[in-house]
Amino acid sequence: MGPLGDAIKKALLAALVTFGLSFPIVIFLTRVNLSNQLVLEQRWWLAALFAGAAFIITFAIAILRPAGAERAPLTTVMSTAPPHPIIRELPRVGLVFLIAYPFLVLVATGNAGAVKWIDNFGIQILIYILLAWGLNVIVGFAGLLDLGFVAFYAVGAYSTGLLAKTFGLSFWILLPLAGILAAFWALIVGLPVLRLRGDYIAIVTLAFAEIVRLVLVNWVPVTGGYAGVSGIPAPSIAGYTFTMGPNNIATALGLPPSPLYRLFFLFYLILALVVLCYWVTTRLRTLPVGRAWEAMREDEIACRSLGISIAKTKLSAMAAGAFFGGLGGAFFASRQGFISPESFVFMESAVLVAIVVLGGLGNMMGVAIAAVVMIGGTELLRELTVLKRIFGQDFDPTQYRMLLFGLAMVMIMVWRPKGLIASREPSVRLGTEPPPRTGPVTVPAE
Image 1 (cartoon, rainbow, N blue to C red):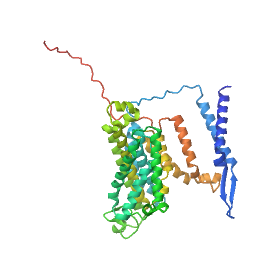
Image 2: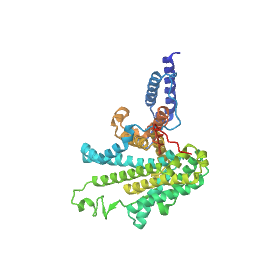
Image 3: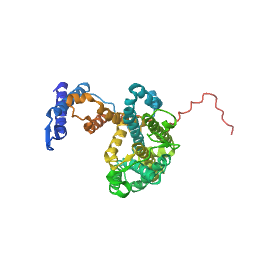
Image 4: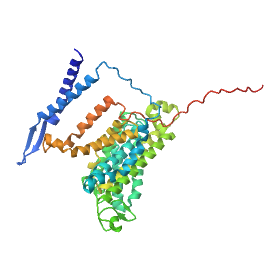
């Protein structure tokens, strides 16, 4: 069988597997009719469409890259070559774009469109970038698989909401306090995992996240249970808030009322937190503690033989990452004004882990790009009205978000096993050897 026959065989197998996976999820759809009866609808055509797409993509890949083609070997040693100039300048270019982003959106879409693009896209993506960078410290730098990072996110949010409502503390006091409390609980959960590695750390952190969620659900007198905590005060400056009310800062300055003031303030606040996270983590990488994280990630036994304390290294990595998770939770609580356990389920941790893996473990720019693609892509799915014209007005593309996540993970693992940006700039560069001496050598007299 020639190359064409092999390509057709692979494409048919991929189409068959896709059709089989689509059978229970895509084909059958339940609806409630006007008589309040559950009706089962069958959508064989949609499964056939997915199978056809799998056939075409697999066939094209098999033709363009035959099975006998040589592939470049995967290198396990991190390259010490300087990063590409585009990668090196990406943080500066991204920061300039983010500073101008609200004004660009306002000019392009007007007041009504700017509310959606700043809130649903800008602020939401920046929150996930902050959380993903915090998780990147634990997973990417230290090599500890944490599946319960959402617990630190919840600790920061609930500590902010409860302390603000109970004691009336200011947001600017609660913001660092939420990070400190999240780091404290990271130390508590880190103690049992000092002797664990790999999957066992993932199980412990996953259990901790589930414990936190159950406490939030069942400790009703304090957390409110499923009802959550409402009426969380919004951030204010010198007693003036950006929400509509008597102490509105726009009214005090004589400006016309608009929801854009609040969105601009929240956008630049979360942007400042993201910049702070980037600056702190990049500086930590160059310190002895950051180099200890990377050494432990590469080989824990060799790390012990060099006299590095594994216990302190693990705890410091978990505390540093959880601190930024707590900051994200504090901002989320103040932005929403309402929090509930439904916002801190395991799926949030899974999304964050997927962002870190897709972006590239230990690469902050890659993680940021992955967050933009995954979170921004999810929001863009809501705006694709063309899909409703094809599949019907009742078609909700966001229901297939996890399928797209899985597809993206598979494609990245096949074509980019180390993530979108696989290269990491070393935290320390060794200097070049000095040039050989060419002048006369003086021999001291005996």
